[in-house]
Length: 225
Image (cartoon, rainbow, N blue to C red; front, side, top):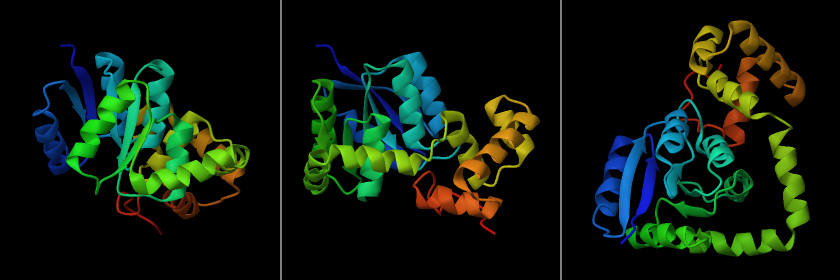
């Protein structure tokens, strides 16, 4: 039997251990790696090439939505299931726009997660029942949904999204530059572009924007002024 290979991306160790314990009992599923932040998830996915990635949204260094985008650019055949505490339409829309084919709220049963993994591997989508009814309405109005997604993204590039998250997490320019492997001057340019595109002119405002759009959770960020 060819097992479905799975990468777990979840920053809370106790949750990750619970997911690992659950999935290890399934004979047709094999956990090939675990990531504690979004950047590590991207690196491990590229190295391990898993069939399915179970991805938390709110993670340090790189949030799950941006990690999903970056993974699928390199591994379009992999399937991403978002596992989140949030069932808001905005989060689901952003997950769809990032390319995720499954979305489960963390209150879902263990059986639902296993079913989701098997279904997305077959090429299907899988969403928590409470989310499905919203999706049907959204797909009926796909044109307006796409317009909304573009409005939310504000035309930010992938790199600008990464810089925005690091700013919102309270990282200094030097620390952000080291994290991304670019110069401090480049970080400063990205910061300027962010402020221009979003019409926000201070770090506190960028942080509030990151929280309000789900790039980070308020509990993740450290220093809102």
